[in-house]
Image 1 (tube, rainbow, N blue to C red):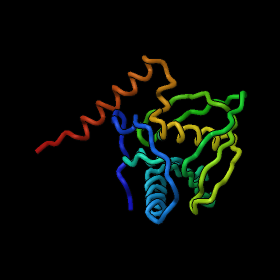
Image 2: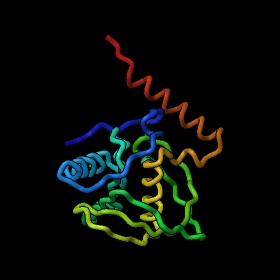
Image 3: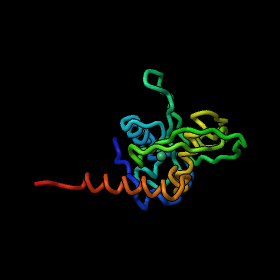
Image 4: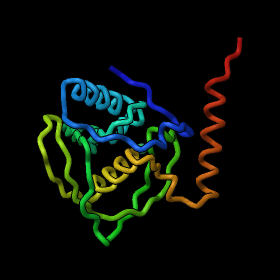
Length: 173
Ligand code: ZN
């Protein structure tokens, strides 16, 4: 089932999400919905908070266009190590439509998480995946990529989003 993605500014996107005790069928159904919503958007990552659910759940798939789908489900992801070396990617976000900015983050990270079946896993990521994981884990702590920009740039983006929200709410009869 497709879910509605929350758009900044929205106070829910600023909330800290709660860990799950285990992965049950409700969690799996939610992860299926999140993946479907992310593919349909389309995007390469989605955190549960972006559809209004304050749980520490993330779905990611960085496979491009024709490549075979390769979904990654992260429950309670915890980054245990970040490299000193950094990399820069132009980031966007499904909660900040059509807004992009270059963000510098640690180039590699190691994390532990529970997978789709609730099994404990570890993963060492680099490149785009490392950036994507850090972007999504930030969501679970109420952090958006615009928080890394200067106040001026951040305010400009928020202003544009507010304007766009008003336009979509406008009804002419
Ligand atoms: Zn995002």
